[in-house]
Amino acid sequence: MGPSGSNNQSARVFVAIPVPDHITEELKRWRIINIDKLLFRKWTHPQDYHITLQFLGEISVIKLDALMAALKNIKGTPFPLALNGIGFFGSSKTPRVLWAGVSGDLNGLQSLHLSVIQETGTLGFIPEDRPYSPHITLARRFKEGEELLLEAITPAPVGLEWVVDHFSLMRTHLNVSPMYENVETFTLV
Image 1 (cartoon, rainbow, N blue to C red):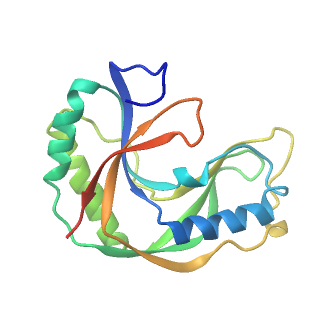
Image 2: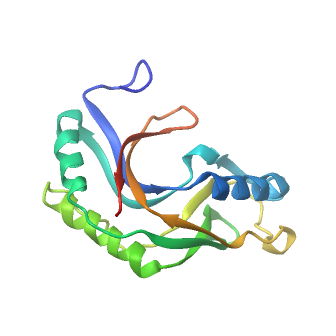
């Protein structure tokens, strides 16, 4: 499971909504235009674009089957989302993360997030102690001594839509790119 040299006894996992190809392509185009003005050290590989529903951390591979069984219990109906510009976590002088925002049926997204937390909670997973803030991470680690000049960048995509009809259990492989592997997909009907 995973690249050679990876630890087969445990897996670093999270539950997420993968971003479809047409959204990925739009974000890639925007990145190419703006990358020289956005002085981040680590850019997310476009194949790794996603909206996290819950980060679960390092778990025993033995626990994966129980986790997948719990996630299969989630019921929900597909819902629309759309790109909604960009933002960042941290100050404009030292932003930690550059992200693409989402709009659309945020109630549907919140409902799916809560369903995931409820199901993983039966296995002892504890949700993060902060409000849920859905986003697509584009870059991390801004270069020290620089300043983010938002007015210098081309406006980010707004309004491009897609329908969320599935979510995934993802596994992280450190020090490779792309770094996320789809372990299992769960369909919303």
